[in-house]
Each structure stands twice: as C-alpha cells, then as structure tokens.
Length: 443
Ligand SMILES: [Zn+2]
Image (tube, rainbow, N blue to C red; front, top):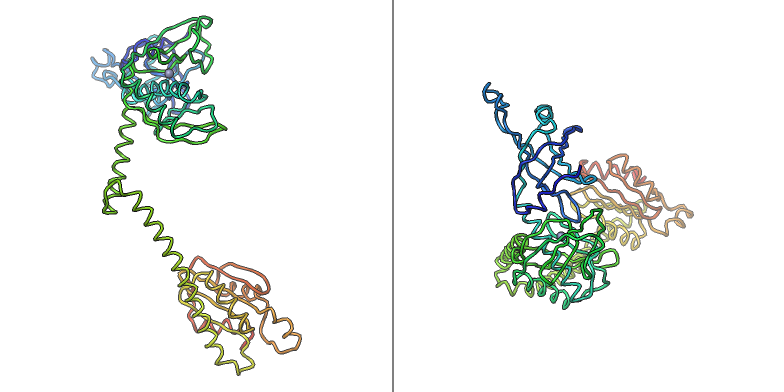
C-alpha cells in the first residue's frame, strides 16, 4: 500500500504520528515502513530528509520501572521510495537494542517522527530557487534545464546550451531575484496527466494518476514531487556562483537563502583576511595580487640565472682542482662530494666536467638525500683501444656497484648514469673516496 505523503499535505510540519506497517533488518540497519510520513524520500534531485523516529514508552514498562517505560529516539539516516512505499533507513546503536526496537515495532503500533527541520527548510529554499532560476534561463537565454542536483554544499542545474555569456547569466540572476523580491505565492495543483496545461515544464515522467504542478504565480509552472516554500520571498537571495561545462552543455552552480548568506559571509571573511595580510583595502586585492605574482615570476627567473652562474663556478672550480693532478697519467677520473646538491645540478656538473676534461666524472651529494651522477666521456672508447685508459668506463656498471655498497636505486646508459636514495649518505667522506677509487679501478 502506498505511504501517505504528509510532506506534500503539510510541508511546514516538522513532527508527526504514524502507525508501523512493517519493519525488517539487514545488518546494522533497520528498515521501517509507516502508514504516513513527513520524511521526504530522495528523488527528483532533492536529497532525503533525516531525523528521528520515536518509540513511545509503554505503560507496563513505566509501572515496572523498566527502561521500556522511556521513549526512545532512533536516527533516520536515509529515506527512499519503493513502488509508492516510503522506506526509512534507521541506523541501530551497536549496543544490541536493535532487537528491542524490532520487537516493539510490531505492525500496527504507533510511533512519532521528527524531521531535521533546518535541513528540510534548506532543501525547500534551494528547490524552489531552482524552479525560479530554471524558468529565468528559459526566458532570458532560451535554455532548458536537463538536470538538477541539490548537493551538500552547492546546487546545480544543467542547461541545454553550448555557451552562456556573462550578460545572460546576470540577466537570469536579476530576473530570478526580481521574482523572489515580489514574494509571489507558490501553489500546488493536481491535474490528470492528459489535462496538463500547455507551458508546464515536465522533466521526468511520474507514474502517478495525478500530476503535482508547482505554480509560481504566473511566472512558472512545473510538474514536481519535491518540497517547496509557500512564497518566493522565503527563498531568500538566489546567487549564481559559477559556470562549468558539462556533458556538452552548461552547468550553472548556485546557492539560495541561508546557503547563499553563509557562502557570501565566508567569501567576505576570506577577502578581508587577504586584504589584512596585504595591508590593502579589499578593492585593491586583485591588483596587488597580480603585481605580486609578476614580481615572483621575475624573481624566479633571476634565481634561475644565479643558480646557472653558480653552477658554472662550481664546474670551473672542480676543473681547477682536477687540473692540478693532470700530470698524473694514472688520474683518469674526477670525484667530488658535495654536502647538498639536487640531482639536476649533479647531472649538469658531471656532464660538463666530463665533456671538458675527457675524464670519468663522479659527483655526489651527501644530503638531504644521497644522490650521485656518473658521466663517462664519449671519447673514452677510442682511448681504451689505444690502451691508455685504466678506469672502468661503463657509467651504469659503476652506478650498480655504488648502489650495492651504499644503497640507493638508479641506472642509465654507458655514458651517463645516476642514483638516488630516500636517505642521506651515512658513510664518511674518506670511506666513500676510497670505495669509489676501488670501484673505478684507480687504486
Ligand atoms: Zn520542485
């Protein structure tokens, strides 16, 4: 049997009495069907109501001084509709009282229910606002609403147009708010399907003998099963917050009533906080942030240049250091340990020094993470043929041996290989130098 929908009959009531039709349990959830309810079931873009179902205390329980004498409230977390029946989903406490609930809730027993009125009124504001805004976009831009979503934070409608200019958005917003400020009555009329007057917006076909039509003065008429305020003034402000592309159309994001007020208050807080940080008036914030970003971009470029210059100096210094050992024919490799260089810097240094000196170059950084780059000069091959070269000259083979000794992961080619670790290098400089000389075949 279809549940009597009290939320249609008395949309401003927050409490009601009803009789239990049936209950059943699945895990920690108990499902309750009542003969009538104020709880709106999720549907048509509007989320379900939440609230409590109250089990009255029994006289017998009172007389015996048992807990059965007290009324108990059980939270309703979700409500859905199944073939005209409205099903309340009740989350049971984990103390085992679900069983008590089920035994006290025999078919025919009476209960009371209370919906979360703040949540419901918010939904009524947003939903009525949606009707008004949808019609405003039809009038201003010839755009029909294809979808409606009432989310926890914002509300959105999907329009069947490809683009929507700022002018049309402002015009629709103004028109919608004009309808709000006129405080037009919102009335419900029921008509058989074949007697729906022309001009009524019908989005989703409903399998009911009578169609509920929500009429907003002579501004809009729309077939809808949701809950609405009784006059447009109660919607409060309708504020469009943004536009997104969506499924080949345009999604309009907006907020009404209390939501719009809270959202504007938060935005004002953010703006004034930003203005305070910048020591500027609120209207100066965009300009100041713009020029700060420009400044940062210039500084970043300058830092990049300084870093490159510094790197060139490092390279020169390393070449000078190695130049003093050039007379030693056995010295075919350059090794340098830095306290903290990033991998990109190590790569530049290793490659340049190896190219300029024709020597195998190993540069590493102890921290903040152990990193290492090995560069082997391209000319190495011919030298090997002539028999002069004594060092190991496959960069990836060198890296593999280093990784075995001090950890880290890496690899690369014959001429350039690198290694990186999550941790700093633990071994001391002397140990590392000796180890590297051994790996390179210098000792
Ligand atoms: Zn509606």
